[in-house]
Image (cartoon, rainbow, N blue to C red):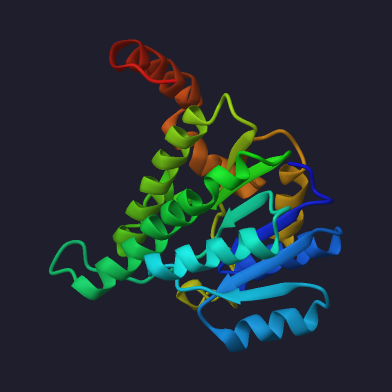
Length: 252
């Protein structure tokens, strides 16, 4: 990914990895627009980073997504990078009764939200040079954490979607990236002080290094052991499978 001269929209940019990514990209001279539900958080980030802009977004609401997408295209026609970062993580009880509110909110935020957000902007992005759609998944997409099984399942679903979308956009100018963090010191599960979690600034520094390469998967060193769990031949196998499927079912 080209790390300068972009216009970048980041969901979940009011805290954690989203804020840190936004600030790192802002410092490199990109125009950055962050989004989230908590206005106070957005205002704190933009106040600390003059020139950065913010827009309120409820990623679980299709109407909010459509309104924000139209506003972005109208106000920032040069937009060429979308980073789907918004997500929630809660402990659950996959061995027993699942709280339906937890289930639907996690699915809506972590899976439906980024799919809808990309869908709302993809035709615009196809017209731009150096266009990027990026998704923040997790190493738990590859090695699920059983005490947060629903979250892990949503990240596995997102990884699967990324593979499909990357394949289907392979003849366009849009690259599809997946950022798969390990455990990082953020607000998720109150991990800010967790000694075993990766410091946020270290994660961002390593991520930016990989982001500036031609890699499709943005993995810091500590994430690679989890990614390797599913086998190094996954991409080739998935692409070969889909090439054969296209021959049978048609498509591009």
